[in-house]
Image (tube, rainbow, N blue to C red; front, side):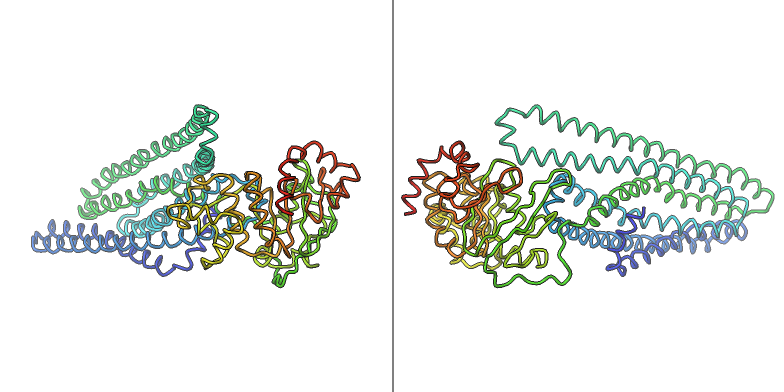
Length: 586
């Protein structure tokens, strides 16, 4: 429950709206509780005095109280719904902002479906509690307190009968809630698993169809759906049994009141109006108590949802910006790794005491086998992860001492896993630069050899790119990603195998366009393309997280070490392309 209460801090901003809801709730409850009193007075007056005119006045009073009760109930529901919508609006935005700011290390471990479930289904559960559950609890407390006082003043014995059964109902509500909380937590988690399966299936639908795996994917989804169905049915059985039990516990004291109260009326100790008032008040109290079954379900869901939301909101990113971090301005482009060690977890180090220095404007090629640490080096420069030991420095300044925004503004990266947004080509190119003008966008597209292709499309730069760029070929997506990075005009450029899907002729054209842009810009390229490697100022040969060799192509070939072996085995297939590209470069 403490997690749910911690989310109520979001209500502070809208305490006025919630106060109006509570005022309307008090009015609705007060006018409703006045109706049995009017009825009692009417019955006793007519029986004792026989004044029919007073009966008409009482009837008008009941109608008026009912109308005011309805008006107050409208205000209660409206202001409660408005408050809940405003609060969850803020919660959603905070969750989204938190997800944007958590480092790669967090997203590496979390499933996308689980995060989507927390931002949607869990938030909706909290909203339902604020809109209905919270007010129902307060209404029950107000009615229970008010009706108890009235009943005790009328006849304390009958009041004890009522309160005894009310206590039983309250105790049962607590028990059911304790049973349902872990059930709803499992349900929320299963929703996350189901969302993950659906998200992965829709994202990889081409792979699913290519491997004819529709039946296997359907079985996987159906299995999780059955688990979710089973948990829902278990909760439904508990709630379904609880509701009639509540009805029985409400009806039982009415029978006792009729038996005992009837005797009191016959003995003259109680009036018919007072007995009717008891029954009416008990009926009024029965409604919110019966509603406790629904409230129990809302509370159970919101408690489990609140726990998952608070866990997310309290998650601290491993990459933290220091208080008072400096802006990284006037970057020359010197990059140095000083005894850097890093691992994605504490058990398996990926980099081990890596040290090198790159001067401004140099072209660095990173080569090595899969898993040797090439991409990890690229991710440490813009501080997507923090080093475990050592330091990464730009112009002699530790990247941990500068603001993340200024750092990443100066480090452009074209990642191996390309991602395009569902937007126009223009918007995708200008993604990293707000208010980019058309001339700069077209210049970046020309540099990436994409401008002519874009103009050949019917809608040009306003052509809509499908989800994840599915309407473009691999080479077109890579060129668009290169243009997007170049538009930022970073002083340090990282190309993480960004030409893997580009044919030889297209690569020649891109390389020609990039030559001027690379000039004076520190550039890291992770690639197996021979022409780029041969022209690099520095080649870093990675092996099992260490720099096995470094130097120029001719130097490394002369040593006939690991680089020579890689060249002979892995890169020899590109010799023909390399010769052609070198001719163009020359």
